[in-house]
Image (tube, rainbow over the protein chains, first blue to last red):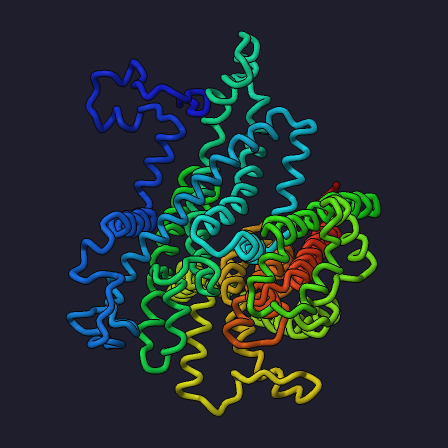
Length: 310
Length: 315
């Protein structure tokens, strides 16, 4: 047996497998941990379902209302508050706007908020986590105290406070979510860096005189990415939830922009005559959160096989 | 143990300073000149509000003096007075806190009586249809946004059971039974996300315990399944569950704002929302600081209890 832990880059066949038939070569092949994880991820059925759901959301987010004959913003009072029908599969709202079209526009908002916030949290959190884990010292202490402070607030409450004081708008909402998530990213990166930095290959790199920046970028970062990717996937679903919750409270997306949470909030006035306005945005949120969660579960199991054996 | 507690208490100090700084900076500094904002706001145009604001904020002082003055007052139990009503913020918080406390207790009750039995049952019947149903239910329960579920619950009750009284909040002192009836649905909705989490966790820890040698021994010496489960399996699988229950208190505190808003409960969550709407910064800063400090203390107590419950942990 080859020890997969010691081989990180190569995906070449061992010499004895060369020339034998492909099926045998496949099983003998030495796989890098990343490729092993990828193989395991592809085998997970729930992970596949989740990925397809996410793919569908991304397609809708990019295409937006182009997939619909209606416009998400133009009002038509002649079809106000119509129940679901063939012409309007998810009914119409108070202003006669087609709800399915607005939900598709809302997908764009949700995806935008979650992806930008998560990317921003990685851009802030990864370098801070690397510094805190690699150097420690005063800088590390200061960074980790900052992280502790973020963790001292219940998530929704901190988002609420930041948005309320910065002003309720989409960019501020994204910023608030990113600030909250980066604390988690810092924690995860720091913990992984601390376990990786004492390993032989890092010492070897240091011994041949590599600069700290090179060691961090080439030897440490690749080895801490997998837990970060898993966490980022869960953050995507959490961001969708936070955006919906704050928009529901009137502190996120502002009208007339269709966001799932805002649509839910607006629907409350007509809930008794037009329940479809309440039901469908909720289903959209469930769909998105479920998709990202299934994907995250499968990724976590793939990167950490110990957990999936339960 | 005492050393551990002392160590944790000391570690609390920088966190609490950081928390108060973050609240101070975001509430008092980022909005620019607060008085300008207040002047532009119809709700607060009264001269009295501006007078209260000026008096409390020492706007002419440099920023660090303003922070020190504020935090000094806070440490003496003075969170300032509301800019709108002139009522002390702490009085307002203490008047509303019982609602939150009751709601948390209610949610905890549902989490324990629903989550732990279902999780144990799923583990005991692993890979049967019962287990599968519970697991699928737990996944869905986890992804359903609780504010959506709450909205649907309000809709169903107001359409089909308008006279049931479950949507009507009554203070405990007026009518205890009506009070509990009014908190049933909010408590249930608030507990949902955590219930599903506890189901999954309990299932995992019970499965773990079921595979231990001492369980095999207990069965081998002829103990009934009932005794095996209640004496050997369940108590041993509860330590991680108890810890997570504590951590979930934070999730519940965060969920209060949404729950109170939907069910119109007069708790601290609604107070925070109202203070944002009316730009009552004194109330906003005071109540968020209050909740954050409670949250930090609860987490500390959980950590200490955990070290106490599980003697294997040494610090």
